[in-house]
Length: 407
Ligand code: PMP
Ligand code: GLU
Image (tube, rainbow, N blue to C red):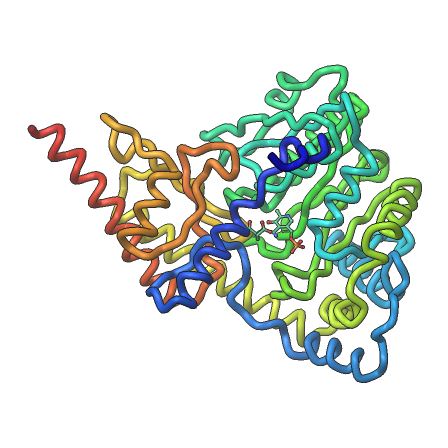
């Protein structure tokens, strides 16, 4: 019997999204015809000017330790980008800490703000890593079920019902992974006012902000007045909209004392993000050619969203789904396909992989296994083939039900 591990990781489970992606890659490498519509990773290459800036940084010898909080060009670039998206609001680059992916930014912020006995509200379905990260701080994650009539978003009423005097934080994600829902300006404002009144920190994960299908970027906490931002941390990053997942660059914008704590924390963990990657990201956030690329990628995601929604509507009209307004995920419900013996997200995904060679993510990874997540950050050809197979599977399960009912 091996020695027991630390209590720090008593709740720890490996990320299901990462595990499914690894399994799809393994099967592909073994020669299987597998389509990975599981992982949330753009199929596009990093825009050339950003990649080039990374290469040049290596050639210029930017290969030593970076400043722990991030190079000045990148912090300024992020501040400029956040400011431009929020109507020129002033953003101080000194309040930004650059990390190794926004996953680390979220970890830093949670670790700096939450601890034993704290409760942290997480609207559900929720991205797989939020509850895990909150557990690592020894605080308690409290899932707040979203309203199915409202794109699975939560209202102040829902938050208030689950709140408690030990509630210290709320993690919001808009545009949302896994649903694609986007909170409106009025909804965000109402939540921020409620949080302020109750002295609750908001961690606003805005990594998908630019992948918004309405006009301009999605509404942000940064569009709200200063007094509503006193207890908030904004998470941003290069991975999604800039197709830079492997460069591992994320950022947090926070009040100065939180910035300081996050910087100190990271001075003992990573000593800052990969140095050449920071130069690549600095170009990504400021170069007009990259900006144009981002606009093109967002247009492609929107076109794929339309295609997907249209096919679900016409080919399997009884299947409930959340209409996505941003990000690149499509969340559909599987438990109603066969009422007598309800299908779970887990069993749907297992059968789909076995019978059709398509990887999707069971809703259980996001705390609701009545649903399944499909990522359309894949090529048009893979989306079409993956969808043909997924819809065939749904029809097969539904006809098995019809046969049962008829018998
Ligand atoms: N937040 C959300 C909602 C995500 O979907 C992801 C996906 N990886 C992340 C944060 C972390 O992204 P990264 O660490 O690549 O910046
Ligand atoms: N965030 C992406 C996803 O949800 C990438 C994997 C991960 O980091 O969890 O698929």
